[in-house]
Length: 147
Image 1 (cartoon, one colour):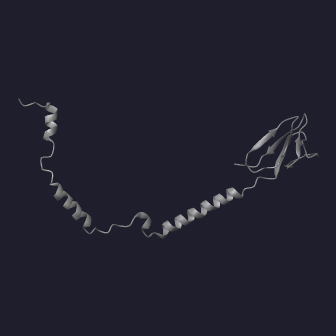
Image 2 (cartoon, helix red, strand yellow):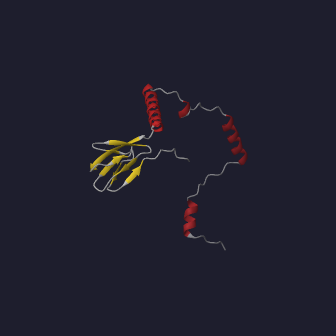
Image 3 (cartoon, helix red, strand yellow):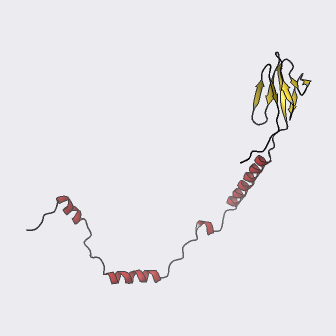
């Protein structure tokens, strides 16, 4: 009695290749022949090719210069040693001097407002601060951040 296969399996078996697998010795000989055959010289990789476009070289150089200048500008930035003070109302006092128009708050000085005065303090690149009535603040020394 011959076993019967599932119809799906029979269909799949019909799709298998019918040619014979080559003899292992002949297959190995073909591999050896292919390995020892001279090869065509391939084009060099992208990194080993000479650059043929002066425009591309100029663009890369410009990018390097602009990037270097931007990094240098950021690293060379020093915080301001004085902050601008603009009175909004009344007469705020900076370092013992009454401000009429505008002034600057230096390191170690105090900005003081009484009950009728207010001022705006420009804090470098950070922004501005509104100093209300009956307030006092001092400018401390900037210290580098430790990492």
